[in-house]
Length: 594
Image (cartoon, rainbow, N blue to C red):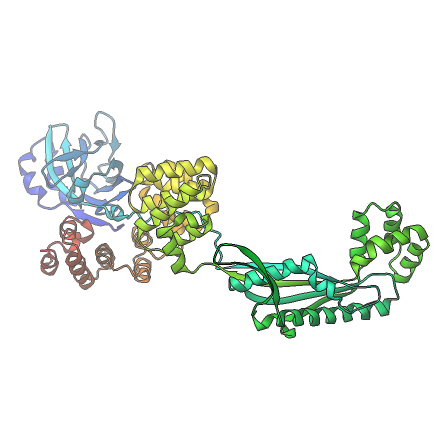
């Protein structure tokens, strides 16, 4: 809290009466009330585990004796009676012997004092006094209190670091598809019965049977139909369209009366094939509206690829013709001129281009969440790595999460995600050493992985090594905005409060609110805390601190009562907290913390 408090030293002059005859030095004691002190901040404030002591002293005109030598020592006085002297400074008059900061007699002068000391918990109830000695006469000025205690609000920082998991690739639905072909006689669009019983079509039927049994969702058919390029253009275009229509009709009829040979086992365990068993299928499969026609026409691309992949003697010459001419008729004229070659084309290449390509798209549903949770508990070895990693994210009990991640690690010892995620669950259970070992194991499998480096950074911060933590976090920024939040936690600990606010961004958490309090944005801190929906005792306590910084006495009282009602230990914290120093003698405040 950066506010200034000017303290005039009164009553000290009374003690100076006995020094009025000390070579003129007595006047300094008599007029000591004219010296003013400003301490900034006041109260003092813990900042990155250190406390800055900044004192400005102003000496009035005709006060500081020209021959005077004064040693000034700021001193921290603790509630247990112990003291800690800070670095002393020497002030000298214009004609004094020795070195030090010179203070003029006629014009007066000033002293700017700066020191920094390590923070200790005892400082929460300290006060800053100023001890001074007139060296010339070895006489002490009465000690003067110039500041109250030390604010240690930064110590409210909570361990809410963002520990990251290796994400699963589990999908609720898995795309499935299969393709078959229907081949046609030259210049014909009728589907031959043999085409509907080819080995390829039988495998296609098996896909449909499997999908039916497993509850696939059918997304429809895509049909492309082609004619070989050996014919008149318009005729072949119409022919390709007719082939698309005939393919749709043939598939629809087959699936409406869908039959397959099925293997059965009798009571004695003997297996036999039962012919033409009718299998009910989703009506969508034989609804012609489910068939979408895509490309139709002369298949020059297919022709070129087939020639390229063949061992035809003149294939380079054929390919050259294709590159030289774009006109269909000119191409075919040039190719037919190679009579021997054309015979090979007509026998080996062209028949496979007279076809309909039938693609069936479907979606396979994965196991339900309830099924996954049951199997993860009873038979985790029946689940894939992706299923295990996903299932761990849908259970809330941390012991269950850990057990699932451990099962994933056992079954997939080479997958860094499993080891990393075991470490994640152990961090959530405050098993720091165990978690660190898992993160190091994961790091051995996937070096320079930003997710793992972030987690090692959290470990380092929890172990008190802020510099190491910051190094890890800076290397882990590729893991996303959660790393920036973790950087903000280190910024708070290092006293870089403005940086902390920036790093924590739009996160609405207790710590983000705390960072705004420490950067003197009480209004922003309240907004962030309100948005966090944090109803903990410590959250109520922080609300009281925010109220104190805005002078809201009612807010202090009500929030402290709420906090103490939830956690009685906060009563003692409030008693020693210099955030409330202005209200320490207030009757309502005293009643709230009794």
